[in-house]
Image (tube, rainbow, N blue to C red):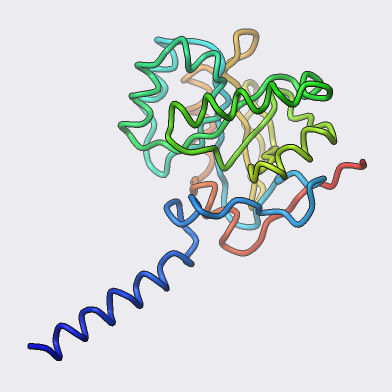
Length: 221
């Protein structure tokens, strides 16, 4: 009996040491800096397709969109002003365990206003219980001061490979990170999203990034 107990303790200890190092959504909660330098923005992986949806507007449309999402789920980048107005949708997202990140304002708004970023990070942590792994500006412009602040706060700057909302779905690019808008002035329809979904098989963002390696875009200082 004692030998079996010792064996069980050994197995549990080994599992605790080994499994946190395996890439995946749970282990990523403690892994933050995915780039080597603060002037790099993640724009592409090397395997598969990942879908990301930027949300800063809408209620019923967003509820319907979220209710129709299927695993592997896209990453939802959420504007904190929007999230504050629709806490019931935030609860819906949390209940379905859909991955989220922080969607900011246009990049220029942060150039002389890093406290805006800090305020948004604090709001995200208040809503979700931890700081986000991912941050994207609404226009995917990341000024140097913003990139430095993200590096200091251990949050990853996430761009995209392709931005799309209308027209013919774009051709598939291996390792692509697709960005889909749901803004007041531009938002994808469910019909267009379904058309896009028919053209490719999705993986989670983590699988696209960690299957092999990631590509970043260096932005001049």
